Amino acid sequence: MHIRVCGPHPRRAAYGAHLPILASIFYNRVILGFVIGIADGIEISPALRGAVLGLIVSAAIAIPTGVIESAAVIIAAGIVYGIIIDVVATKAS
Image (cartoon, rainbow, N blue to C red):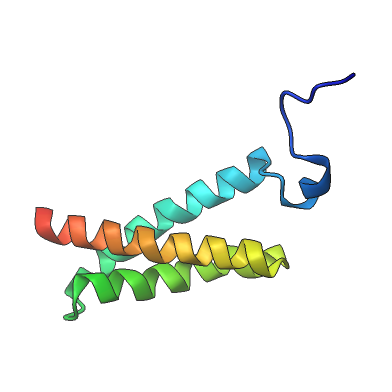
């Protein structure tokens, strides 16, 4: 009997989180922070601004995945992170 300690589940091999994918998601979130910092002059609610920018920036990494479920999760996480980043940054400034 073989026990798989590391790696994706055999039925979910297409959804496995590999290092290049994780690195690109991390890089995407860093870019999201910079974009939100630059967009500070846009006079709308920080939550709305963060959600819109999170959607736009995350779509760039989500669309090429080709898997609807993965893209939806990446975009949803981008929206949530965008809101959190923008609200916290606005209150801190």
